[in-house]
Length: 154
Image 1 (cartoon, rainbow, N blue to C red):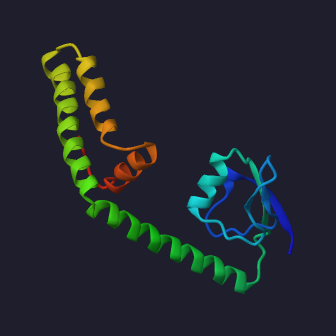
Image 2: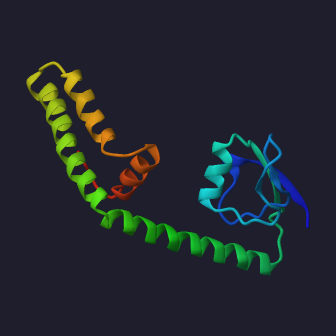
């Protein structure tokens, strides 16, 4: 099978590595023949690996079936993961704090538009920081916001 070198931002779940990914310190990040998942792509990117080698897209049907199975597993894992996030007490608390703070920001913007009041930037920054303080780290913040993606807040 032929391989291609691609930029990590062109990679997508289901692609298969044709070479090991070795970091600058000599440690193995991912071995050859690993099927890429969204989390692995994010990890590779976060470690500043810009290019990877993948097998050519002209694969046999067995490889295509393996890719489709990996994508289906990834989709199911993501659905299950975000359902667990939505059902957690942390998420419920985050969502209620988010709603309170977003309502305050919305009211501030509406008063600017309708009553020609000045925007209270201190309040807006404070409300935003309140939302951010509800998460332990940026990854949890992303998970919480992603779990709320169907919500129209304004």
